[in-house]
Image (cartoon, rainbow, N blue to C red):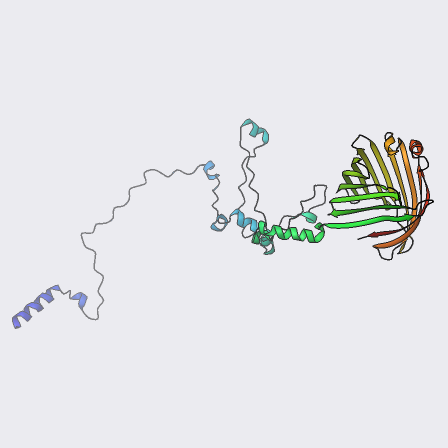
Length: 376
């Protein structure tokens, strides 16, 4: 045991650096090993680095866009979310003459910015382009009227079409009808009393209508003469309608094609002009008009005039060429209601030319009238 302890102490003592392990002493750092050789000095510079030329110094540096600018797409720039980078200015302008010679390529115009929708404009994301009354004064064409199709974005155009059609019908697009009996009177005359009627009924809208007209006269106990017209009426303005259709004579087999115009002339004159072409080639015409002069809110005077003309003699119908006959009258009515108004009046009729000879004694005259005007 003592021998082993002695051997261990001897080995430890051989590995100890006595000066470095003495307590209370600071020993210098160990020197580098003698085998480390000094780093060789670099060789002298073989050649001097060439200085940049003056032209190279003037070369512009390439602009590197910042990440924020590079991330700004045209759509975000149009919405005002960021600012789009400015395109670099071209070094040399390319005039059209040089572009035509093939010396250069003209710059391509950038695509238009995305439209600013009303929703984005309301959120403040963009500013809509000026339109309508916001445009500067000038003589340019008027902008197109906006179409209220915002609901189509949610419900679809097909689903909104019936709702819009119903809206138009309820705001002026509906169909209407009226029956107007303008003259329905009894005329006391020598011998046999006479009667007369004149009225129309129509059905349709503001533009297109179906109109049925009828007028005629006669004496009690004798055959009446009159006509019925079935017409298509088309509005050609706020106050006038073009009409076309057929006319059938009452009591005869005579038929006519009808073309005419009726409406409200300036100063509120109701006028009507119609041409007739019979199935035998006879051409007739009629011009008539009347005016409602209001004396009070209920008492109204209506002067009336009618002229009939013919382009040829029609002996079988006792019609001569030229002015066939004329009728002038005046009627005073009192409106118990707007739809119901009795009246009294006087009328004067006269045949002219060949027609007067063909009709012999039946060429008209003066007649009193008592009648009723109504509509519903």
